[in-house]
Image 1 (cartoon, rainbow, N blue to C red):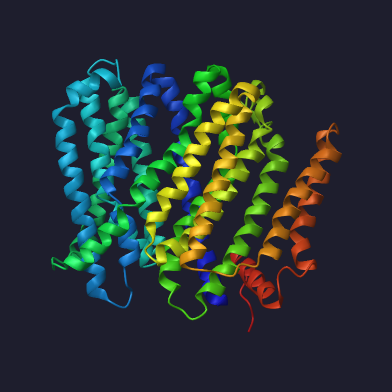
Image 2 (cartoon, rainbow, N blue to C red):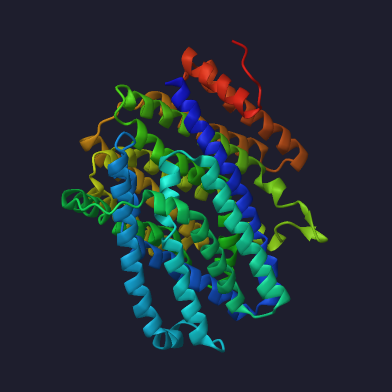
Length: 494
């Protein structure tokens, strides 16, 4: 069990390194856009890519999730057939929709943008999700075969290509918003060329109606769940703008993004977690393994919560071009950062609990859980924002993520019961909240230097406490020892 847990930790770290670097490179495009595109063009870029995210859900049709579930490491032929069905379904659906969207692009352009040459812009935007979705299944193949390094390097390479081409078209060639889509399309074509050998090797045309039907019935329920998930993530912005003003939205957006360390941790864990549990669920001790991993997730997510919550006030004060990294007028919203991060923590719990749903092919429960949470988010935004402005949006998001985790846990335990160590898990969680609240209360009003020392001490105490309170047993302590030795490249002498 120890070796499997360490392999998951290693995969998570590998994914995480490249995700962090990729996010940073993408972030570097922001000053280029703001200096070389008009405000209207920058807004349209955001709107188009938000729409592209929704279109990608339709194109994938849940077949990417179906491939994950029906990949069988001991049955090479089934793996290839599942790959072929998933890829063909996505390719056909996306091709049909793309033709239709291109045909009616003139009609859509009138509603989507007021920029010159808007029909060309819309047509370029339409091609982006088509080329995106053709790489979904090859990426899934790399994850399932645990080619973590190759997966990460390809994604990183395509980000580098896209960023470089953005700078070329937008800054050097000055072609405006069209340059953004030129860059993304070329990067996607480079990705397809890289994946072509994998596609050809894995493609096997062999009709298996039963398998295709099972994959379709498994994948389809994930589509509304994914849609609901997107609503959960983005619906607060338009509601906040409708009920308040652009200034409140700006403060909310900037401080929401300061919770990115937790979002990245959950994202890189998710990349490693799904192929991990789908590979190991047939093991005799799989449920015990999954329960132990969840306890570790709670512990590490708690550390990241405290780390970011305690020290974000120092990060925003980093000198930046004669000012601060975050302009002081946004600091009024710093108190929502822990709230948003706690929402991401519950999203991580949700990701852990979906293991049983996917293992037992009960994906019909996913849209129920995410749908309820999305509806809750909308209702709470409408209720809370008029009273506490952008803070209401943050609390609504937190409650919605908690509900999604609670509902999916309920259904998961019905179909795939796992005995989690809830006493120890709850102790870790409430220790985190206690350390955070007590430290914030007793350091309030002190000088920054004094606050820093107290917060550092509180963080160290929290990291040590679970070991002192025997939340982790001897074997688990060995796992942590090996993990940190691996992390710092220290070889254990045997």
